Length: 215
Image: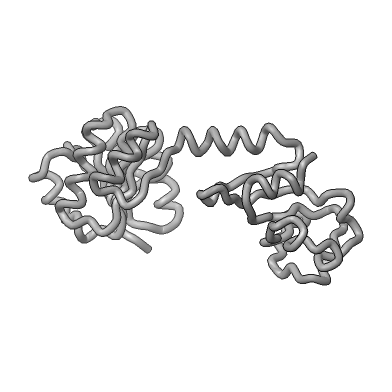
C-alpha cells in the first residue's frame, strides 16, 4: 500500500482516484472546486479544498511523506507547471504529471516531473493500432518503438510448435503468454504446440509484430 497525493479532480483525477482506492492505496485528493472535492470524499481516504500553487498550503500537507504525487490538472497548464515545480521544491519523492500536449510534457519534465502521462495521445495511439487491424485484440506501448500486443495465432502456425516455427529468430518477437478461454498460460516453451484457439501476447518492435501478424 502506498500513500498518494492526487492533485486535480477532473475526469482524469477522479478515474485515477477510483482505481488507486480499488488497488488499496491511501489517497489524499486536492482540488480548488468544492463540488469536486465533496464528490470525491466517498472515494478517497481524504480530500481537501485548496490551491496547489500556494506554497503555504502545499507545505501544510507534508508532501515529502507521500510515496507518490500525481498532478492531474488538465485545463490549466500554468497551474500544473507551478504545482509540479512546487512539489519537487517541497521534497516530493516522485511526481507524475498529466500533459495534454507534447510541449507541455517537455516543460513538466524540465520542471520537476519524474514522469509524464499523456492520456489523449496514449489512448489515440492505442485505438488507432487496435481498430485499424483485424488481428490485434489489445495493444500496450512500451516506448522506443516496442509494444506488447494480443494477437490471434496465424493459420500457418496451427499444429506446429514454437521451436519448429523458429519465432524468435525468424520474426524477432517473443511470446510472453498465451490466452485460451480466458486462462493465461505463461509457460511457453519450444515444444508448445498451437491449436489455433489461443490469443498470443507478443513482445517486440511495433513493425516486427505488424509484419508477423498482418491480417
